[in-house]
Image (cartoon, rainbow, N blue to C red):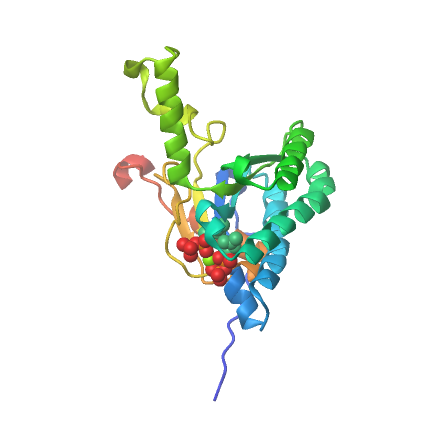
Length: 256
Ligand code: IPE
Ligand code: IPE
Ligand code: MG
């Protein structure tokens, strides 16, 4: 039997058009559990190995001059996983943030979090808030962690807060439009992503940025998250740059 291993040797960084970079890239980092299983390890082993890929895409984004990178690290639905796995993920978060603080500062990276952080364990929340504060002066890449996040939660929050503002008379019903509504989302300070990457061969959005992804280019790859390299990231950006974004118009209107 002949085994054919396909290795992509192309240097995708070279091919990137620096003048047409996405301003905001969002990633659904998926496949840690399957990666661990393939290695004969437990799921947590996969999460631990996913940290390297996180560091790689953060570094690559900072180097390229991407302005926003949003990483889906833990969804509202992930709370339903086995207690031991949730605890391990929370522990990994604290240790990664502690280890990476120096690098964030060195690379001029600002940290933000979207999601229901009130649900997070106190030590995780405190570590995050402290890091957000310390890095708030940085002016390079903004790294957004989606933690205990889901779009339906976010949209529900927005509706509740709009209703409250109408009740206390700081907002009038007739003033609600898309611009105003966006201000009530957790991404109010963040532009919509131009590119969404999902690893591990799953073709779904899993409750991530449903409102913000309205016109985002979607990129799916079979690669499992711990195997996702800088070059794979550059390849996704190349793919994005080959697309024609029409926003409902015709091709002729765009190329005019
Ligand atoms: C993504 O990998 C990490 C999180 C959702 C926290 P998974 O843990 O979902 O890995 P698979 O999908 O089971 O392989
Ligand atoms: C999505 O991955 C959430 C994160 C990557 C944090 P999941 O593995 O939880 O998604 P589903 O359950 O396969 O849709
Ligand atoms: Mg998964």
